[in-house]
Length: 393
Image (tube, rainbow, N blue to C red; front, side):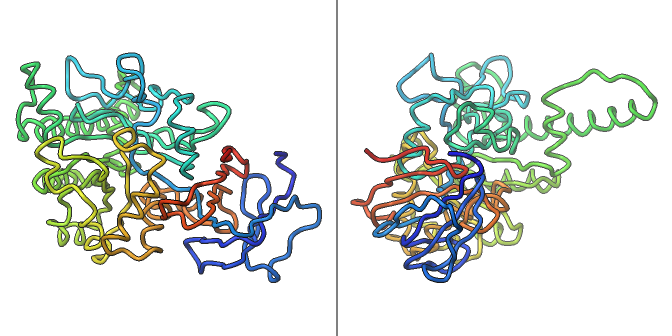
């Protein structure tokens, strides 16, 4: 598609998320951005526009999965495609960057588009206390640089069973929850010291030896990016929030299996949660309360909630079915759509570009042949930056 060409989708049922649904709407875009949205008969289609007939179709913003390992942990490859955890000498590896482990040709990206998922956060795994930086990418593009939205969108930290399991086998720290907390605190203290020394060296005209990991944690201490804290159990969530408070960090709780137990704390601290993967079994003790039942109480309490497939734990194309399950457990249809569109966009700090169909935002949207949350419906086309990048055969 040419950047100068104008496109219009007319006659579809459109759910903008921020704004009322349109039974028969018109969506216009050019140069990768939405330029107009409104009802048929009330919204002018510009002359020269290429018009797509949307009769009988349903349109939503492109879905957003706020926590995946797509491209960095490939499903059909074991050693060859497993680049998610760098384990060995230390459980603290902030210098690692998820962006460097992603294979943009992983079939998971096409799977995402087949389910209407147009943006994902990709994170290192949870073997280490600090796994490195997370990134945000679109799920289509000629190469990874074109797909990239934010190369350094947060710092992955892990609490609970996973770091314990990995390092107790190596007979190294951490082997307890106390050890996990101590390593994270010390890394943050080291980063603070590093920032002070760097500032002093700059004032005195000296050259300081650089540390890529401490520089990333410096961004965390300056609140430029959040701590993305893998925590299932309520006690681990509490520890993550306690440490964030001690160092004045922004924090997002990932997985949040027992977050319902901490609603007053999450409310008081205004902490968002990313829940899932709930299409999974109780593979370990901290998943005892796995499911969708906690989503409604959290949403009702005013907590910002997004869903995750944790791809490839649950295949990313089933993100819409995860949202559908929250309706079964009490959310309204519109609230469920928010958990996979505008809410993850807000958590990722990208709601100015993504998560809703609003003039000026990226033309990322999905087209379905029925209710996106119905098991019989399928995504018939996905658009990223105004380009049709996937179409059902």
